[in-house]
Length: 528
Image (cartoon, rainbow, N blue to C red; front, top):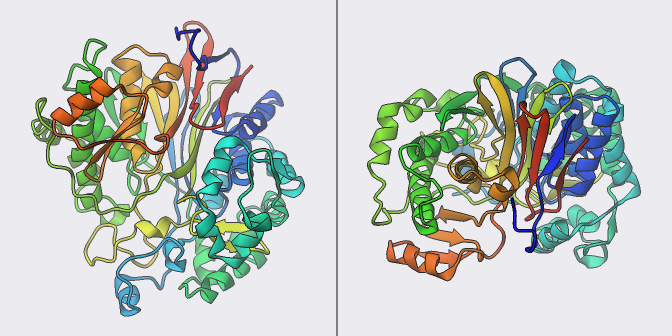
């Protein structure tokens, strides 16, 4: 139990259904759908649509998503909602234009958004309430306005320069020439109209007709290679894929396969399985072991992961016991190893949510623009802010993540699901760009190695070995930082909170749902 004399939050408890998101209006939207008899998929779609309005810096319908869905009594289903590069995109085309990398605001950073394709496919196959109902709150906030919350305002203020670089984004997102502050009211009426169109016309309303034509025209105006045919093909980009998993402390942890980095999370867990990380271990040693496993897993991720059609090694090889043993032997308990050679761009702006309904169906759902406010490129008639996922493509021939016609880039957004003896026990996820795989492993170690409840494991001080530096949150004590420095880590105090998380535990013995939501964000877990 948490110390009630200290600031913090308790786990949420409910007996029927629960939703956990990073924004209170999103949680409320999902909970309302559950109360009206909607299922977990319905609630997840209502929640994420709302977040695409009220957390514009983190997510939007111009982005991508990944989903794990575990129907009660069934197997885990994985849905890849990541978009593809235009058919005309290639390393040769871009390097001939003088590019050596893809910049965040570049039209080449915009792949055809995959989120709406995935949303509508998931809804058609597993939803129960009409999209008109599920988008109702999102449309209302878009058309009538919503109050800007504290964390949203904090992030918004950091994106002023990006938004100012696009005349249309500047007009909508910098009213009066500055970012809204907490408590200000903001509206996106054009986005509301597009959501109405999708609710009545499905994915075709986004990928064909006026919306697609307007987005393509805007991207071509900026020098993009996109065509209306690319967008029409994108209508069917949301695809079911076979989930991947590993065993950690007797539980099966499920992830989406590449082009996401879920395999990196499983590689870290495999390495950690060989260490005693129980409560008796010092915090410094715990952070050290986790950092070393992270560096090894991410080094392989950066070199080997991209579009699944272009992987040099199958996932099974990366998760094999022989691979795990070889990597684990490289983790020294006495000294920090050589940092992985990071060559992938940094990104950290995503929303994650999870839902469990009264029938025991569980959804783990993540939706992203990549950077804060994505590419910063905005199409004003549709209200669509475009993501920047193509920023992670490499302009290196032969690299698994090299840009190419209709390729999917490597993604960091990874929903997760935990099962035991064939039953789902927890949908969960960790936001924070690169941190997600490392964060998932740290969270699960807190729950299974240290016996923490969900909220305690989410609240725990975080660290992340990135780009040769070990970032630690200021809640890590000075003695621990000194010990980590002595082990050879280049320690620095994180300038902003590391990531965010949500989780729901299904306690069948007590007929109870336990939920946790990250205090580093504005959201909450609620149920009934």
